[in-house]
Length: 556
Image: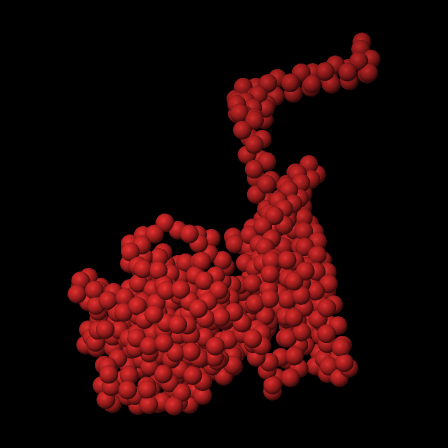
């Protein structure tokens, strides 16, 4: 007789055998079960690992962007201002400085995937008044502002990098719940941030402050940036301009009733170039505002002030007398003899028609358009009309050659006439095309050389003419008048301010654009005139000039 212990052991062994038999039968019935799944491992484990790490990288980038969006903003005291600084992803990079309610300026400061935005949010009025009451305090604020801005940008960069890294690691931890994947996500973001910083530093352009694009209130924008003539590529002067930026903005806010105006240099002559007003009454308001706020010395008009040249239209030009500055004018193809006579009656106006005049130290030569086509647009393919314009250019060229005084600026209406003046004067102004463009003109190979000059300024003129003649074609200051409404988007009102130094050389110019009918945007862009890099080109007989690549509207 078996003992109880042996019976229990035999019973347990029997149960174990039965369980093993049942499990074996279950595996045979269910070949796709867990054991089979383990046996059938993926055929491409390497591909699976690559896909997983790509997923980790994508999650890291998404987490970084979330972190940058949430933490890529900081505040910094810049002088008397409380400024908000932020970094955001961007294809173009660049820097924008917002100064509400005056507007903003945009700088092409760097390339790369990070855009820097600086917004001056508030001004402590009481503190500003206290600073202004003590001599030198406001100047000291402007000097300290550059260091404060640098401090704010550095802190913003570190804060943005930290938030981006933290966002990537948190999101990776939530998605994968594994330390290895979280660590890899952090390494990916560190690499991306390091690359972004390297691109920004390598493409940083301190000279971008030379040519900012202004947006907002036109009358205040130039006073913010200061002196264009004295800006150079050196970093120390770049710092000085930032100091002046803060100082001038402080003055704007502190003394809003007496806004400072743009004053490049006491010896600078400021010339306002307008063209193709085409009877638009709104144009005079813009011209008057610019002339007053920028303290313009001379206004030059390259024609088409009227549409039909009729007697009733003559009263449109009476506003010229209210501008209180010398006004030089050449007739356009829409202006009749009646129009020219009406302009000549204004006390401050001079009509140039194969004549030369000196105003404020600058010598101008001009000739009117030989055509009078008020009832239709000019036909650019009409050989007779083209030849008439070329002939007018030749007539003015002969006048300039025979002049005892060097001509600084020539004025024509149609740019076709400008080619005949290449090599005779440093600058030619034109209009007619309703589209702004700037080009260098190659000298005419068949044109005779100008006669030797014996005046004291002959050497300066000879030096200026070592470079090719600069042709500046203005857009329509009147937005092409009623014609501007024929297109789907109205033409903007365009005009330019030219800055001549004490040697009568064009050193800089501002392009101003006011939104067309129904629009209110104002933009001002500063340009520094660079030396001609092709001062001795191979002469070409072509009479065309380069324009912007966009299709030009039909001139009228």
